[in-house]
Image (cartoon, rainbow over all chains, first blue to last red; front, top):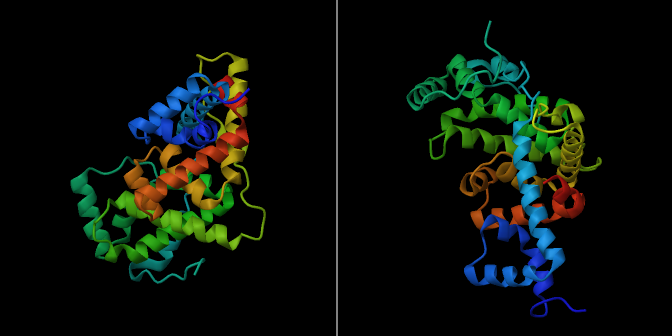
Length: 90
Length: 199
């Protein structure tokens, strides 16, 4: 059985799920994806998965145990007002 | 004894401007006070981009040194936070280039991923969430640096597209392209089943 909608809708929808959840699609493109996803199990689940991914990534912002090291200004202090400490990455 | 880095909240705008002026005049203490407000967040960004605590600590020191050495040239065209974050992204990318011949990315360990247990979640749901977080960390570590930077700045850090693009040093359209690519790859790496069942 073929995919619902115009040929190419499925692949196009799969490639634009992030644009969809971000609100980056123009109205016509959004309607195209909506129409296809209504009858496509994969793309319907893809939208839910993409939303869940973004939600989970946002949840990582609450990570604990990530205090900056007490040494973070050591090279600045070593450099002093002239700022001339040699860079480790130069 | 100086306060621990990152303990302070960002200074009020007037105070930040005053600290900035003093730092630009060569006052190390003012620079530390100005920058320490962002130190924890900056370190977390480096940890996410580099995936290795030791390397993140080293690069964090380098970021502060670069900022100190360049602060006299800071003209305030962006916020101090944006400017500092941009240095951090650049330094993280330099560090990643240096280790390009080594396996890309080391997943952040479980300790760094641990969130406080939520009393609202039962143990099995909590375990599912922990599994998802570990899968997310692996997926982020597998992304090319430019894509990882985009998804970390926008989705994890929650910055606006404009601010994240500025920090990444690219236009907003190019940034969004990277962000969408990163999300598609992360979704493919984790799998819809795992995302939908815990989402």
